[in-house]
Image (tube, rainbow, N blue to C red; front, side, top):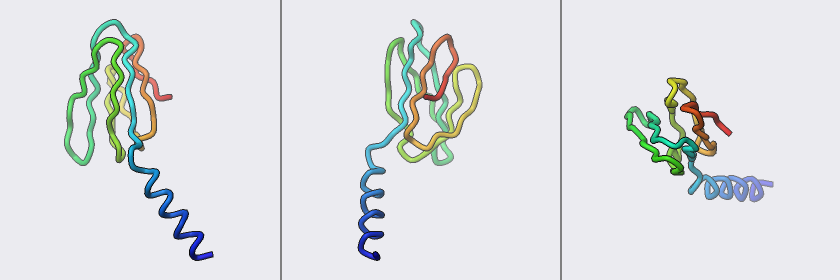
Length: 87
């Protein structure tokens, strides 16, 4: 049983790498997200139609309309009409 638990823990640790949140800008104009990760804020500019990955280890995101959400790193944000929605 102990070997099984160690194997599961190792599998979960390996699967956490490469997982990141993504943002898709479906608007015809650029949009900006403010990402707070590890105490530092950065602006993430998305061109019209662009998709980016970010936030691999959890973060807070301020959407273009001012809404703020906490992300774990596996979500997708779709921006449409200037509003970000988590999918």
